[in-house]
Image 1 (cartoon, helix red, strand yellow):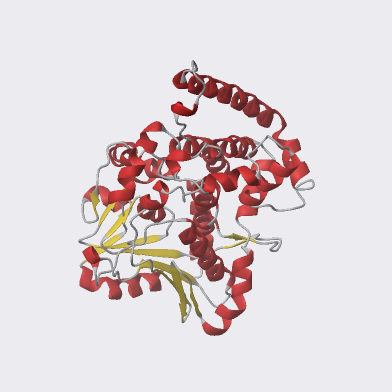
Image 2 (spheres, one colour):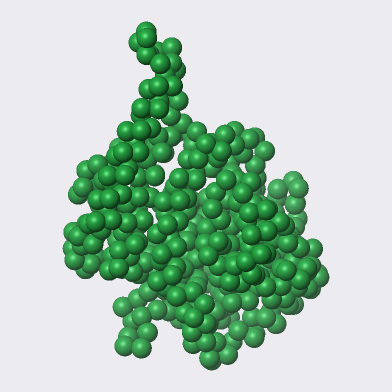
Length: 408
């Protein structure tokens, strides 16, 4: 938050006061970190009534603010934060990151919280009868349509090239839940819709990544976007939907395919890393411009080294290397590349290959072997804090005005 030094009493130095405020913040945050790490299990048990309630991360931080004043920001403090552009916020989400890191690190609380995030959302449960009857749900950022046994998810933010924001995350999680809950759906496809944006008018675009204008205006929240995205719909695509289930399975899992037209930038490329089959047009490209934007590209740091190799991962994440979909290093991310005019036919052929009876069981075992839940939990615990620190980093704050002017 900015302060006009002219309003300070005579003789007080603004820089000295700011330095002292930062020192106090650091001391308080060190104590908060120590407390959460020492008492995470007890805190979580009290908030969830002995792990008998499944609270999502937004519900959990609100409950903690009420039950443990000062541990995380209050609702009033967060409301004030939401009203400010990113450069003028107090950075209170860092305290939410400290809290969630401690909870996710805890041996009992962490897995329980991950399970809570895999449960169907109330919004999806409300929309399920409509989807079951009509086979169509139109949302602001996503159109969901069932044809035969396939759920077609189309990203339809045509004005901003499908750039991601909190609305897109909410709509995507709703669509993923509906696809997984509908017993008549056997597999899902994610593809970008046709754009009205002047630069790509009439063309399909997959995803332009995080909406940098929303980041500048302070509308990319830690809990409801940066963490919900990774722990919510992306994990549901990868792990399935958590239910009370039966003795042999507590998840509903189905195979997924992604089709990339034009480009998959940032979060668009992150998405591809959890799909079972990725098809791309030969004139498309992939990128993770995290170093340029100053933030962490979701779980890509965890997944891309395994998928593409450590050298390519560093070139893409640290160096900003762009991969053409038809070049050799992209083939570890993209399964199949076809000319743009052949995309529709190639999609149908690939969906047919995902129809085997043993596909679900085998994808389950592959995902379990490639990304053990405990390793994912440890990564997300650290991500919760490090991403919070990054979105308030001086370099990011210094860029937000430029994001507002020239960003997607």
